[in-house]
Length: 325
Image 1: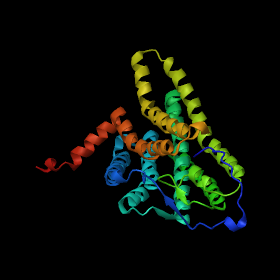
Image 2: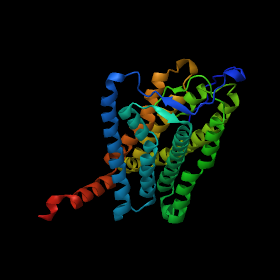
Image 3: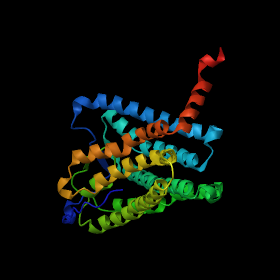
Image 4: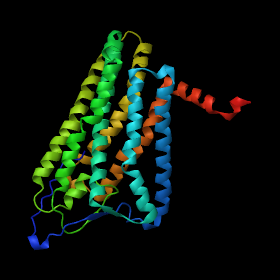
């Protein structure tokens, strides 16, 4: 969810306006010698993301030991990561494989809308997961009562749906702008900053609306997460033994690591001063933000969570062909 770039342009005369019906996603066109290497690399990454997040989703549904609110939220998070990367990676792989970088106006708007919706959902779902850890550590006796199944369903449903009308409206508002001149997007997916650079006229109002949406759907959940963890840390530090403090920290360390990676990369991407922006740096950061983090998340949760490791071992034993002999 990008913050405004404040790039105003004078509206050209009506005779110079041309109605664009398609854009060109340049992607990694500046590295022609690496096209097939990048295709293979991103294909492997996509397969890893699908398999790892799919495995996490599967074991949290099948294993009886993982039927708590924490793992219910983790299952939704893993499914969300699959949806998130599927909004950008298949198109990028197709562009790299076919060298056809043209994308229609409707397809570009659709991709942007889904990326924004899944990004908003991730922000809200991470806030819900922080609340889950807050209740589990700060109010453990009431944990099953506060986060019963009905409440969990409501929290997850709200996370998935709250951003939909906002992002549909924002996408419609951006693509209602007149576009003129170049139709080349120097990015690997349709993101707000490169699209606004192609718009004619003054985009100040559009940028302010983007800023308001970003504050609502990014900064508010982030502040809620900070508030939850400030209380969690204060409670943990009051525990009598080092062993109990270490156990309490271990239950939320995976989520905290994901929060730092996700919000840290997003803030680095969109809150840098305009003078430090470069299109190549933005592409690299967006690559980390939208593709590499979803690949790291299952590793973070599986390596730091004993219950997940145990469930993975059970699954490995169940599917191993040697168990039939």
